[in-house]
Each structure stands twice: as structure tokens, then as C-alpha cells.
Length: 362
Image (cartoon, one colour):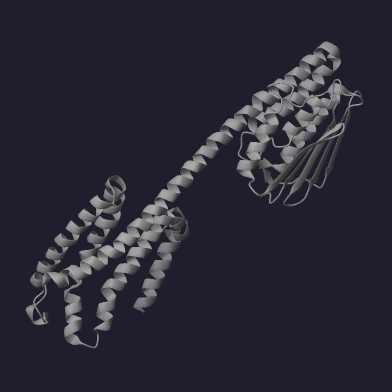
């Protein structure tokens, strides 16, 4: 009855206290949880094993119980070495200083535990007088374990810091790359509006409205780390519609989308720089200009291709700003889709073509 009462009391506390143990466990850092479990297992075995092994010998059993306070002093010994000597002395002053500090710690603890045992253990349980040798052996054993533990945790922390530093560098680089997108795109579209105002003012208003839709996406959506693929495709379509209004029948603009874009997440503004580049170099002095955009979408991947006709005298790097968008995308692909993308840029005859494949979309 008492057991059932305790069980029901615990169940009531679990249900009504508002404490979710799973949520609490998730909030505990993995390294803290590992250290806690390690120490619980280590000291439970260290203290419990001698007691269990001596259960058939009354004198040895009583001795194992009496020596528990001495055994507990090994815990601060372990922590002093693993949490202070290794990360502080060794890391800052090197191995010689660490070994000298460790030797001093071992001798101090050996003498301390030798006198502690003689003081707290009843004389009838002591088979022989404790000497420094039998006091040093367990101390050396504890320090050996704590040294291995300390160096392993130190290496793990250093690796974690290295990864964090690398992530911060990548975040900074990505932030810089994303900051280049907005002015580059705005510059191109504003040029288009100025061109329309001068040549065909009746089309300037619908282009401005279309631009407002693009700007809304650019300012409020593309600043996110990732966006739904359907929004990115809609943005691409709006951009091409804007260019169709601008060029009318002067440029053969083609867009084909196979598959249905859904909630798959993608890095924003990955495809548009290639389309911008096609319009930049595929119109003007090019005879019978053609801009052809193809997009095939599956559940976990997409294939994107854009090609444009170029004149024999055109130069893809004819000014310092040319290719900034493409270089930007190439770098972002390297950072965000390593081993998960394939990018081919080629020029064959009068055609310049870009093919991009992204795999394992989230």
C-alpha cells in the first residue's frame, strides 16, 4: 500500500507540477549531461564494488563501509586535476609545470588520506599500519583516470570551439554575401525602369507595380536563412514577367517549370543572379536574342538551367561589376550545399549556359 501511495503521489506531481522531464533533458547541454553520468557511474562503481565484493566477509565489509569517507575525498582530487590542472596549468604553462603540480598534488593527497584513514577507521579493522606506499597507490590510480578524462574533455572543448569559430566565420561570410544581393539587384531593376520611362512610359507603371512585389520579397522574405521553394519560384516568375514587359517582342523569353514547388526550403536568391546575367549579356547587340529558363522540381531536388544567345564579340567579363552575382552564388553554394550541388557554366558557339542541380532539399 505504501508503494502504491508513493507511485500515485509521484504520478500526481509529474502531471500537475508542469515539469516535463524530456524538455528539461533537452535543455541540459550534452557535455554537462555526459560529465554528470560519467561521475555518477565512476563513483558508484568505485564505492560500491568493494562493498559488494566483501559482502561474504564481515570484517572486510565493515572496513569497506568505514573507508567510504576517505574514498569520497578522491572526488575533489579528481576534479582538481581534470577541471583545474589540465585546462589551466597544462594549457597555459605546458607539460613540465603540469607534471610538477600533479606530483605535488599526489604527495599532498597521499599524506592526507594516510592520516585520515588512521583517524576514522577503527583499529580492529586495520590489518597493518598504513604507510605512504599504500596511500599513494589509490591516489595515483585516481589521478591517472582524471588525467585521461581531463585531456579528452579538453580536446573535445577545443574541437567544439574550433567548430564554433568556423561557423561564426561562415555566418559572417554568408551575411556579407547576402548583403551584396540587394544593391546588385536593385541597381539592375532601377536601370530597367529608367529605360522604360525614356522609351515606353506607358509600361513604366506596371513594371513599377511588379517591382514592388519583387522588393517586398527581397526585403521581407529573402533576409531569412532559408525560404520555401514556392516563394523563390514565384519571385523568379515575377522577375521574368517584369523583363517581358520591358522587352515585349524584342527578346524571345521562355520559362518552363516542371513539377510543383512546395514547402521545401532553399537558400534565397540562388537562381535569379544567373537569370540577371542572361539578360545582361543576352540582349542588346545580340541578333535574335533568346533567354531560355528551365526548372524541374522533385520532392528532394531541383534542376535549373538558363541559357542565352551571345554575340561573337561579347565578353562575359566586360566590366568590373560583371559576374559579381554569379561569383556570389558560387560561394554560397560551396558554403551551404557542399557535396549536394552541381554547377556547370559553359559557352558553346553562340550560347552561354548555366546548369544547377541541388540535391537533398530540406
